[in-house]
Image 1 (cartoon, rainbow, N blue to C red):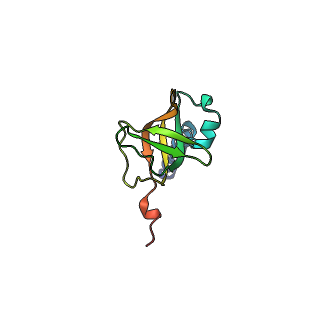
Image 2: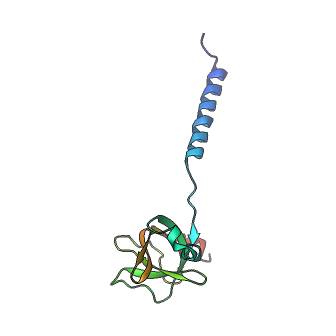
Image 3: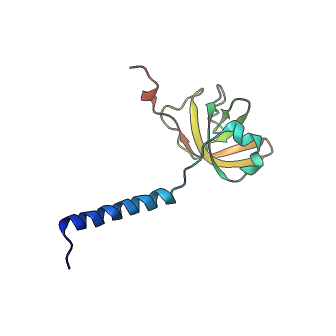
Length: 127
């Protein structure tokens, strides 16, 4: 027994909805934390990949050691960006997002960056 054209379209449509639904269920949203949230209980995030947002502290960018400070409201964190490309539009004073591994060192907590994201400059520039 062959299906009519409308029956085949219905079956294909239902399969597409099922595949889309499975994709949505299997993807977990990534939580973006502030520097203050992570440093309030850093042991919970130690040696884990975290996604942080914060402001690049003015005069903290050191191209020799490949580090900068990522500031929150009341705390700041050293970010080591060795081996990571700095995106266009990156500058001190800018709010950015950094994905990396939180490590405890002799100098304190350090985020070893895997990725650095800035916002699109066209969103912030006046026309």
